[in-house]
Image (cartoon, rainbow, N blue to C red; front, side):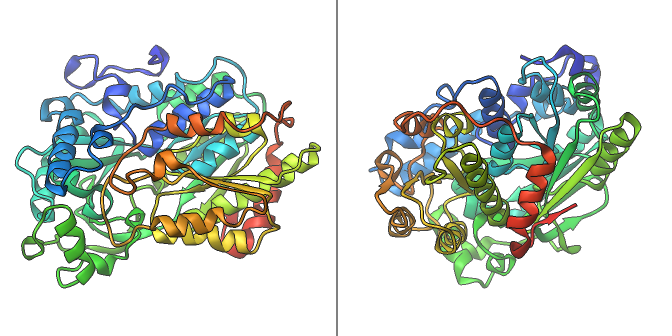
Length: 472
């Protein structure tokens, strides 16, 4: 439910769209808030998501699957008129309204990351994003025309900014991570440039006295076109598993990406870059951090920062933290689950006494990250792997043999979920698939008592320093 306390009058005098209609289904912020809130209520993610259009088409020819994915993306996206009715303050109210109405010993804010959700659950506190993703229809779009995507996105961003001047809109056109859907809908990430009023009220009403605030910042960068009007554009993204040079018109990788998405590399015209290394779409706006710090100083709540150079650094440090936390409570800390993308369930991880390692997606880079971490860690007796099929083909994706190699690090149990492997990589599975798998793990209750923020920060410093994790 949307918290009325987190709402304000929307643009054009109407009530604005509900948050659950605005925030893109399957987006990181939406999934992580839902998973964290359920775990803090003592629930799992068994009600999250349903099989998508691709789940029934794993054996269909590529053109059929692409057409189905494109139609589904267009239906789920907002219309142009609906974009004008987006109320970012109401979205913030929707996020905070998902958490139980009680006092909390702290809060985690910032960039979306699955390990952040696990960290928040270990601390016994909410996680709230510094922005949110929405998708808007692009009726005559083309996956191979980033220049046309910019033109259409700029008009949509203008409508969004007219009613929400306190956000920055980052548009992402990435056929490598979104496939054919990049030509059916425009992806916009709205990042708050101040601390939303709904967040400020939530913190004032729900935090215990002197409770700390932890801000996580994804520090990855990407070439961006930014005209300084509140809307910026990037072709490609770090989550693609590729480098910016791979989106150059002459790149062989781009040719493979576009052909897999039904596009034509000869039509690719990327807009001119104005900032060679801006924070990518999941970065935190400086104004948001300043607002959170200012609010904390004014209300007696210290703010701590964790700067994350790559997703692997926080995933590894959080997994090490969990292992130490579980063992201190008398548990083995010897069973690992490797989650991926939307396939996570912090509540079930806590119930079963598992160590969680979260891969951002199924790209080779992210899977190599968990392989390197496992190679340098004390062995685990069991390793369960949940690879999320991205629903498309890309030269950057890890194959099933690489995922099997991750499972092979288990001494006694080595399990790759067959439900996610079936149809990989072109199918799709909902978040609840992770819940179905983890429910089969033996129970290891009671859960350890919540971590104190000071303990968590010390553990992150110790485990993450050699990976470039900055904790301050």
